[in-house]
Image (cartoon, rainbow, N blue to C red):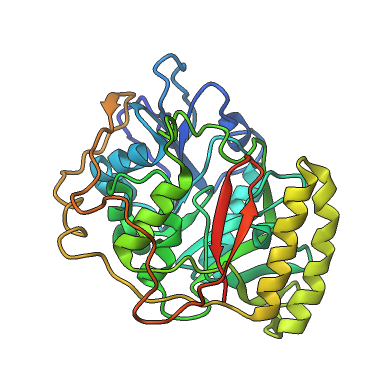
Length: 364
């Protein structure tokens, strides 16, 4: 029997997977812990709200850690490296994601079965979304693609160790545009898992002020700053191929595009319908143009080692912590640059996100 997060850890039943979330008063973590299913995963809840009651349960760990989302994850990664090392896959889940233990078990199992480096569940059609390529396509088990969003990434442990310094750079947006490029080796490294979708229940950007996007600071400021730091363009998010229920892999552009036409039915399920429709149309266009791939990159000199100096501390008790840190030197906002490895066309498309923000996505 596992510890409930407040004991001494004796008699632990080893689980292979770990779900981690930054939570507050509106968190849906009770759904991830619903009884009646034998969970394959432990849960580590990091509360940014000190007024939230301690959550206890089988295989549940809890802490208080003030601060923003990405900064909080940075503190968690620094202070619990030894604890994290027990698990093969680690799932960082936003607090407004509605998911059942059965679905979460399935997500972890598919990551393990296909030996994915980074993955995420697809989003149900009634979810709030930014990237239409991440909406569920039910004929597939999963789709291999070049991008995984920050909302609900699942990392293989060795990959998480490699990309962890991204969380220490001081950016609260845009690090998901970098991490796949840091570890990409082939077209089957990353995937969106259609078989076990989750529902994103809040509008995109609904918690932006708490994460530092106020007084004129925009998501785009962080996005273009980090792309500039790594000398990367904003690659369009597109699949390489898809694995069907039979296990057969589909690579043809025409087939992928034809089966994506069904996503049109998702447009009217939430407002603004026009914004959702435009995102779907952009995805169709990207499918027609073909997979963007990844551009291999690495951390700028001196950055990767800076987050490795903090000692790890394993705990089984609720604890008060702060996850404060400053942006790394050299990580100042700069204009986005075209990669020296692969030229991108200057033409870009402007997409209206559901939060009312405007994003610019690379096109070629």
